[in-house]
Length: 361
Image (cartoon, rainbow, N blue to C red; front, side, top):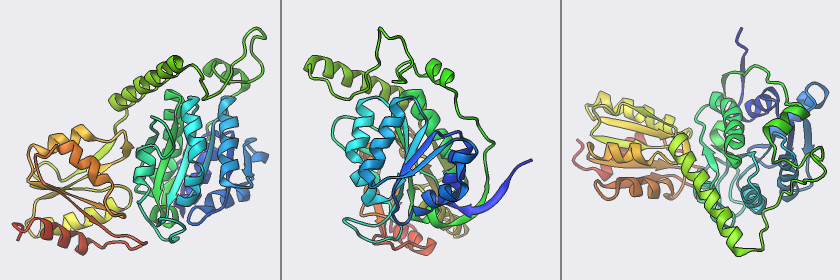
């Protein structure tokens, strides 16, 4: 029998982490994601599943605790909001360089700087382009519902272990704070030490052959070997591009114009599209679920049969760059965005569509 609960997106993350068999969570409070840590502390999973929950002394400490847990083959995660994720960037780059699986949740708020505690989508560049140093990518999942917040916890960690790379759930502050019905996943037992040894032979568990030690590091002083490491990373990223692109299309079969939006903004755009179609305007929606890898081929295909595209984002125009690269100049691509915690309504989206494509009556 399904367990249906009414809860915030942040709360769903916490429940899902326990149920998916995570070994540890290390975090630090910051609005609008503090409920993740608060819910875990309330649920006390250390008494039921053995999951470690620790409020670190800082965001920097938290991401380095994640590094340590991941190095031992454990399923570990952290969560924060935009300024806090900025502080974690060095550690995230280290995780990528050491080829360690981990899950990072970013519930975005407005910036730059301390900004506002209101919702934003202005961390798109930071997440998809590699906010830290070096040539690396994160697998980036963008939830639009509380249900997806829960589901992406398991998906994100499974992908992280499959490719030995960090994964991020990039959520806007709307879905972190909104309440919806969610079906919680069944309990998945935590892996045993024997299972970790079998599934993660690279891990530093302290229980391997004494003649061989697994050294977890992102440091390589030999430039030629470091270049080969980078070539290996790039081969992994190419495999992810081939296998893990996820997106949803709505009303695209006969569309003359396409709106591209991610996260909860896509829900606003879907209502705008439904209103537009009542007025005879043929508009469709493409919602990227993986922001990296980006659905480039799907957008390129749509560009061959529509007149133009509009991206709608809670930022000054970030995803629009990837959309323009995808369509390669074949059709016009415009951007409409709100910033500073302001959220557009469906009418504003429709007005932006008309303003950029004046042939629409």
